[in-house]
Amino acid sequence: MSGDSHLPKALQGLRIPAVASPLFIISVPALVIAQCKAGIIGSFPALNAREGEGEHPLLDTWLTHIREELDRHNQENPDRPAAPFAVNQIVHRSNTRLERDIELCHKHKVPVWITSLGARVEVNQAAHDCGGIALHDIINNKFAKKAIEKGADGLIAVAAGAGGHAGPQSPLALISEIREWFDGPLLLSGSIGTGASLLAAQAMGADLGYIGSPFIATEEANAVQGYKDMIVDSGAEDIVYSSLFTGVSGNYLKGSVTNAGMDPDNLPEGDVKTMDFGGDREKPKAWKTIWGSGQGIGAVKEVTKTADLVDRLEREYIAAWDRLQARMS
Ligand SMILES: Cc1cc2nc3c(=O)[nH]c(=O)nc-3n(C[C@H](O)[C@H](O)[C@H](O)COP(=O)(O)O)c2cc1C
Image (tube, rainbow, N blue to C red; front, top):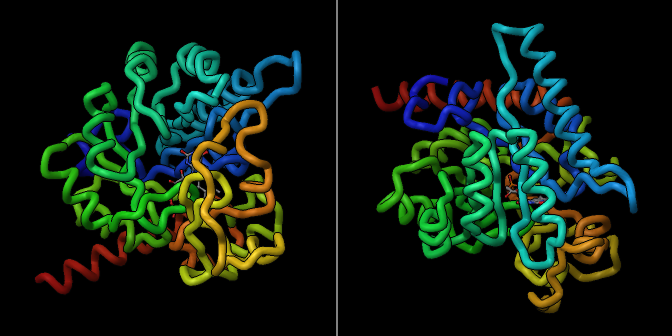
């Protein structure tokens, strides 16, 4: 991608301006490797790598495997090298593994660190110390300022309609408020399901799109077939915004709520105190039987290979740009 020289090196040279966002349970090495090979930044939550009691840390094994696969790809394909990968840390007091996971990411020199739920100086320092950059996700301008004060290099604006824990604000409002004072790397998260939406994110003022839900319906995603099929069959009106399942408001597939015996249009409020990223991370029900998804899945018409999804996004991105230029000339 040209026109990205203002960004940190790790975010330059992507095929399209996109980061595949970390998805609890779903993002495993096969998906991350496919995303990076397709030319966009792939990512996973460190907490997805979960070893049994007394076993070698699975995160260490995953990071070695991802590095080796991407190095091999780069040697064999010097003309189209893989994009860098990112690891997501949940910076919440209940994440008892945080310190160990930071050490492992530091050891493996993870190039892009994504932090969620809490901005901490020492996590950003660890990223910088091994040559990486830190991006922090936020849902409003106040948290955005705090994150930059604590040393994050860039921001991920999680707007209304995002999968998982989403913010309530319009992307138009959130991006323009942040751009009043911040000219560093800014990513937009929420409902980006087409290449045209990716271009719209850039037009708004974001540098890159942060795309999650469409990757659930890929062959490499660690999700059951019923979940992938429901993504394909659903659209924006099939998403419910609720705090019931984790204590924090998020977007979920109504069909999965119905299948669990609840009425998605009459859900009680959740309790933020129930949030737990310790041993079992949240109630298993929250992500295993209640399926997270953002609103931008109307464009997902089939389960495909990750490479085919990125091909589609690129075709649409170029077509949207051509259309816009024709209208403006
Ligand atoms: C099933 C699911 C699981 C998620 N898990 C995480 C997670 O573990 N850590 C995180 O930072 N964000 C997580 N997210 C949020 C995404 O990283 C991202 O903000 C969101 O998917 C973007 O919106 P979109 O799905 O509409 O593209 C999750 C989202 C979904 C749909």
